[in-house]
Image (tube, rainbow, N blue to C red; front, side, top):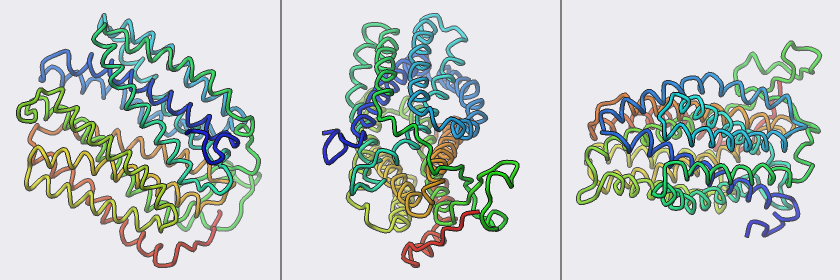
Length: 423
């Protein structure tokens, strides 16, 4: 299946398999950390420990994340090696974490930070690699849908395996992650050599203001050469996606504590979280599948529509707070995040010149990750009041929608035609 429709010949199939291994390894580490930091202690203590986890890992990560993209821009000829290094680093950090989860030592936090940074580095390079592996007649949206769906399926398959390994012992999910990431290290080098080519590429700046629109610059004319603009449609789409990603981070942390204190009627906290998690995962998978089907439609309209739907569901869930609506909100959030991200990818493909497209992907991924961190911080800081929390969720989506809807609709009305204003 991964090699269908020319994906095997182009090398995209290998990337799908590599991303599946990546997703399975990440979920193993997530299971181990969640059990150690969240489930193993009473709720009040867990909240403090998760706050400490965020402070020690996420706060430095928000500083490091903007640096990852520019650093990787400097090594375009070593993308396979960069992906392999990110895999190997996580394999070693998983072994370090396997000792920390038993002893509860402080090394847990820097090791978790290292895993986040390595995972982000892999994600940035993967986004840059996809355009180099497009089969004939494949759009970038369809290729990204294939890769993302492969990761989602592997994550869904590995999650119960990780939970089973957790029952054997606290270390075992991390041992499983180590094995997977070692396999990913070797799979990285199975990608075609063409992914290491940087022919015709340059660096993109995610901006659309007038000062970056003054005609072509060459590397010899700027202190920081090769800065490009990506246009207003892309920046508006990125802002809308940032709101969706912020909502995702918020819901993960807020609902994790809320459902632990107030689980779904007749269910345990773990089962309640599992129900919402499965709903979100199913929504994400459905959004990925629909993204491939809608690849020829105006991506601006898709983004406006899914964010509006998400806003409506969030407002409804806040007003009529209940178990079913919370699960629906998780499902719609997963659907909107997946479809919104694929539409953003389509806009980058359409509006950003090829020579700067891979860099634009790297910068956009970094900004979206920072939005997720911000949402998580808000979620853990709020009191555990369901109506209040979902009202804040609705506000997050409303800000993203209201500030971008006009620009996105204006772009759609022009039929998606853009001037490639490359500064």
